Image 1: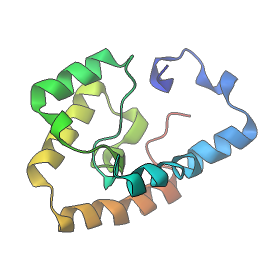
Image 2 (image 1 turned 90 degrees about the vertical axis):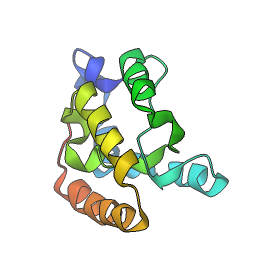
Image 3 (image 1 turned 120 degrees about the vertical axis):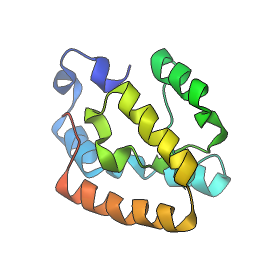
Image 4 (image 1 turned 135 degrees about the horizontal axis):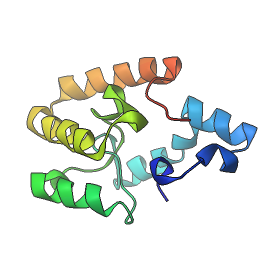
Length: 122
């Protein structure tokens, strides 16, 4: 279940889990998926199958043509605090603007956002 759909996700987080989540260290295993070619460093974040609203909106906007990424335009512009519609708007903007320069900007900004712990619900 997506954490934003949970009533009180903090009940399920251990102190170590909270640290891993807030520092985004829990994303590091996805580097293996990047090396395998299943993911990119930058792109729309993968979604859970249960996030039907997000999947449907992304399909309407043509987002599934993009390779999922560890970080993305939506992540540096609000992360967990964005609504589904806002995430799709940022994903669509990324689709239209994607370039090496834009990806490098997103990667650099990701380190700042993570260091400041911006955009986290919990």
